[in-house]
Length: 137
Image (cartoon, rainbow, N blue to C red; front, side, top):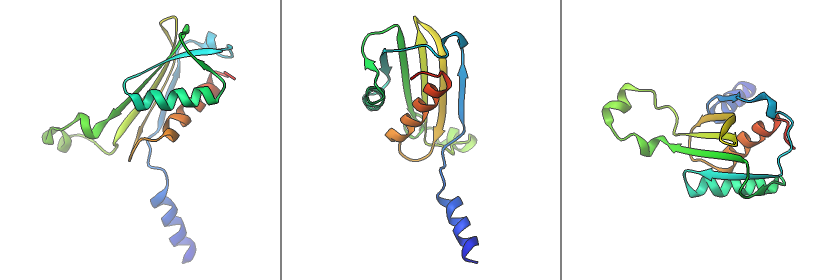
């Protein structure tokens, strides 16, 4: 009985974030060396989190041919129409999108819906997956 309750609690408190969708658009960039990266974001928090993570991983965040575009969408703020909310699936609270470009051409994209408040953990997860997929160290 205790095991069943424990399993049910694990499912209840397990991560509620959506599936991660990703795509390598330019496979010729797998394994390249990137010393500096420019980061653009649609809000200050996304810029701050992304910059901190990339600097901790040893990247110089400055003007570069490589540009990481970070977009955070808060569904709770973007849709206020009650009719839309009742006729659509709003089971998530937001979306986080990262896209890596080289000289204006998309190299990689990754995104994920999430529940609850956005945190640095969400950014770190997607950045780590991107760096692993592109074999960037």
